[in-house]
Image (cartoon, rainbow, N blue to C red):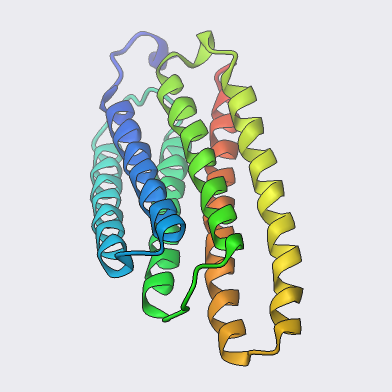
Length: 207
């Protein structure tokens, strides 16, 4: 009853926008890492700094949630969305660290493919997250979220194909390094899908 007549704290949308924009920067940097194969340590450092920025934004949002009477969307949805955008930054950072630290030699094509998928998915999420401000007027959000789900399916196929190839190549150390990197990259895509699923849930609840 009161939600419709009392003023709502809309600063949450600013924080959502900032978080997903930082995630986009991180996805751009990890794509640069694997496409160029240069300055890996420096790019990993920059991604780590961005991950810390997302952490700070997540804490600000959580504090605001505790101190806000009327929220623009459901409290649990806000918390879940913030947590999943934070998790996305964590996974990109984890993958970037391993690419930089594991001395993998040349960058494999599958790492480039994964990173392109991550970047494409986050680009879709930037649009969808920003559309939350006018969620009832924006019918294109579902289509954008569907694209993220499709990209996640592509990432699954890459992982299914590359892991058997690693075992057949017979280099145990390379297998351990790349398997962990690929799994982290795939988890980053999964986190993108989690964000999309949260947005879809918000759409349903606010239809």
